[in-house]
Image (cartoon, rainbow, N blue to C red; front, side):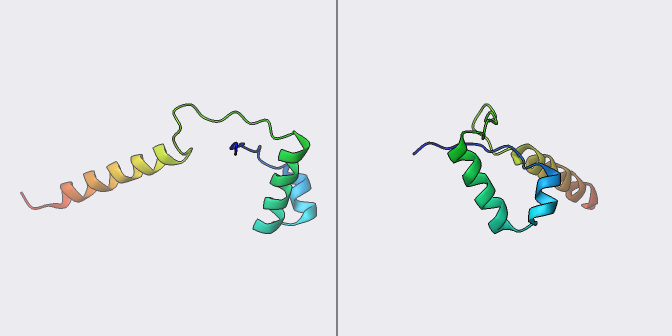
Amino acid sequence: MAVVEVNRPDAAVRRRRGKTDAIDAEAAGRAVLAGSATAVAEAGGRHPGAQAGQDSAVTARVQAVNQLPC
């Protein structure tokens, strides 16, 4: 089974149809079946939000170390 990355839905269409996970999932499935899901997956195989999460963790660690008594 192939993994396909789906483009973000058009904001105007999403407002007209609704903003639920079920509607978004159906729209994504229809985009894949129609062949209009043309987003290019990010290189490296990492989750798109992985870098932001790592940056947040590093910032939290630095703040914690700075609060330790000397």
